[in-house]
Image: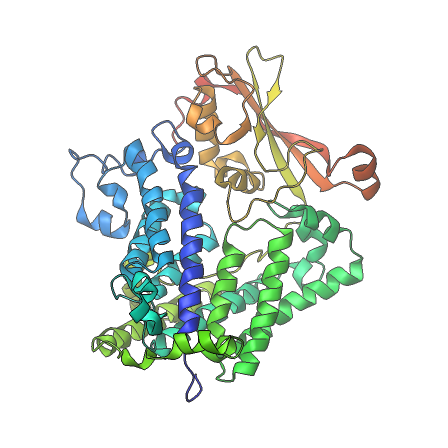
Length: 514
C-alpha cells in the first residue's frame, strides 16, 4: 500500500549502497575461513561434498546441479574455493559504486548462493538466508543502466545523480513485506514454541550470558534488575508482534514510528551480541519503510535539485509488467507455503502445492525466520584438549568463543567466526548429533594447518607432530559477579559437568563414517 504521489528514488539508491556493502563484508568474512572449513585439508572438503563433481573428469547429473545450485560444480579445488568469495567481494564493491549495479548484484547473489549451498553446517544461519532473499529482490530494484555511477559524476550528468526512474511500488512493497515477515515470524515462533521463559517474560534473564558470542555490554545488561528484564521481554514482543503491521500501511508517519522502534531493537541487539551482519541487514531493510520526502526535506535545496531535476526523464522499462506479475505471483505462492510449513505445521496447503514449491527451495528465494524460539537457560561449553602422551594435556584456544575466564568478551560483528559459532551449538547436544565435530577432531589429529588457522592458538603448531590424543570436556559457564570482574579480571565462572568425548586417538575415529 502506497500513498498517491509517493516517490522512491533516493531510498532505493541508499538501500542498494547499504546492501552492497553488507554483501562485500559477508564475502570477505567467508573468504578468510573457506580454506579451513572447506579446503582439501579442511573440516568438510567441498570436493568431497560434491562427490567429485568439481572435477572436469567427473560427470554430473543435471538434476543434482539444479537441486544444489553452485558455481563449485565447475571447479572445487582450493584455488577456486578461495577465488569465489573474493570475486563476490569485488562484484559487490562494484555494485556499491553503482557500476553495472544490476548485473553485479545478480552475480553477488549467485556467488553467495553457491557458497551457502555447499556450506551446510557452517552456513545454515538465518542471516545467510535473509541476505539471499533480500539480494534476490534487489535484482529487480537495481539500475541496469551501464556505468550509472560514473555518468552521474560528469558535469552534464549532474541532474542524473541517481540514474534511475521511479521503481515499481510492487518491488518496494515486497521489501516491506519481507521486513514484516521477518519481524512477525520472529515473534510468532516464540509464542508457538510454548517455551516457559518466553511465556513468563523471563527469557531476557538468561539471554545475555547464554547467547553464542556476547559483547562486553551484554555482561552489564545481564546485571540489570529483574523488572527491567521482564519489561525488555515485553518490549521484544511488542516490537515483533504488533509493530510490524504498521509497515504495511500507506502512511509515512506510521511507518516512521515502526522504523524507529525496529531500528532501536536492532541496535540494542547489535550492541549486546555478535550476530554477523543480521542486524545491519535488518536496519537496511527498515530504510525501505521511508520514502524520498523523508530525506529530501532534510537536504540543502541545491542537493535536492540535483537529485530530483530531470529524474522524470527516465521511463520505466517496457519489460516491467512482463516480469513483475510473475514475480509477485511466485513470491505470494512461496510465502504462503512457507508460512504454512513454518507456523501451521504444514496442515493447510495442499500437498501438490508444497511439491510445486520444492524445486525452488534450494535457491533461498523465500525463507522462514525466528531466532531463539526456545531460550537456553544454561551455557555448556566444550573445552578441547590435546596430548602427546595421554598424561599432559594442553587446551586449544578458539578465537572468540567462551574459553579463558579472563579474556574480554569480543566485538566481531559483522564478521562471523563460523567454527566458534558451531562449537556453541555442538555443546547443546551429544557428539553423535554433530558429525562435523569428528571431522574437526580428525583434522587436528592429522595436523591440518588450514584448520588450526581457524583457532587463536594451537598447542601443537608443528604439523609433523600433531597430538596423539584428544579429549573434550563439558563445562557450564556463567557470567562472573561484578566484584570478581573488578578484583580478578574474570568475565566468566565455570564448573565441570562431564566428558563430552573421553580420550581418543586417530585410530579410534579413522574407520568411523560420518
